[in-house]
Every structure is written in structure tokens, then in C-alpha cells.
Amino acid sequence: MDPLKLIVGLLSNQHRTFSRVRELLERRYGEIDFASSIMDFSHTRYYEKELGTELKRIFFTFKKPLKSENLFKIKLHTRKLESLFLNENNRQVNIDPGYLALDKMVLFTAKNYGHRIYLGRGIFAESTLKYENNTFAPWPWTFPDYKTTSYIKFFNKVRQAYREEISSKQKRVKACA
Image (cartoon, rainbow, N blue to C red):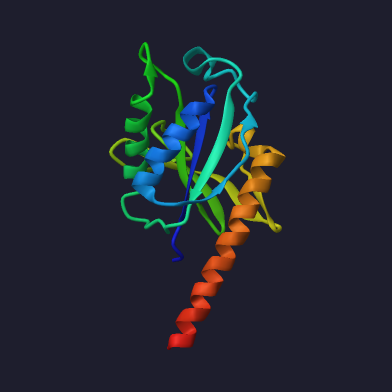
């Protein structure tokens, strides 16, 4: 199995929070190799009561490959990070970790539904996007924002670079053999 690429999405209406969370994520997971543009988030009002209005989303991916053991620990860690950014017991940022593989993009969550797989310690995994016909595509349960052209375009760009990285490593291994 190829290593996985950690991807983390941040949702907030406070841009300075993005850079503060980014620093904490880099301390834990290493160098960021891709950052999306800051995108408007107007696909649901679900988060407005807690996070406020005029929400924005940004994604980061990390250079260091992710091992498939104990993936639930990433979500547990990001939940702790969210608790560092509270205002009157309300989060100022929502942090959505997951991973990108060549054939899918998976998110971690603490909410169970019939299509989610239990990872441990109250954390579940959801295949949010599948790769088919040379692009990422949504499932029926995919969140509306993850179906947008801007998200898909970013994930496709990351996947292409990730695929090239894997191919290059495989060629180096064969050359050494």
C-alpha cells in the first residue's frame, strides 16, 4: 500500500486563526507542501451558530507521508487544537483532517453514520471523494462544499503531485535493486 497524504481543512471567519493553527499543525506533522487559496464557505449554515458568519475554508497538505496505523489519533489531536481556540466555549475554528490516496479522499469525524468506518476511540473514517475518470468525484453522502469545482481542482492538483512523487520513489527503489 502506498503511503497516504495528510490533508487538513480549516473553517473559520478569522484569518489570523488560520496562520496560528497552521503553525501548530506544522510542529506536529511537518512541512506543508500545498495550501489552497482561502475559499468562501456558504454551503450550509450548520457552523454559523458556533463559528459565526462569513466563514472561509483553507486546506493544507503535508510533505511527510502518513502511515495508516492509528489514523484516529490525528482527529483526536485536531480536536485538542480546536479547544485551544475557544471563545465563550465556542470554537473559533473547525479542523477537518483526513487523507488523500490515489483512489480516494477520506475525512475523519467523531460522528457515526451508516457509511462510516470505525477507527477507534470514537473516531470514524468516511470516503468523501472517489477518483474515477481522471478526477475526484463525490459520493451521494459527500458534503456540498467537497463537491465544488474549487475543492475538486485543488485535490486533483495535490493528487497529481503525489502520484508523481510515488512514481519517482518507485523508480529510485528499482534503480537501487
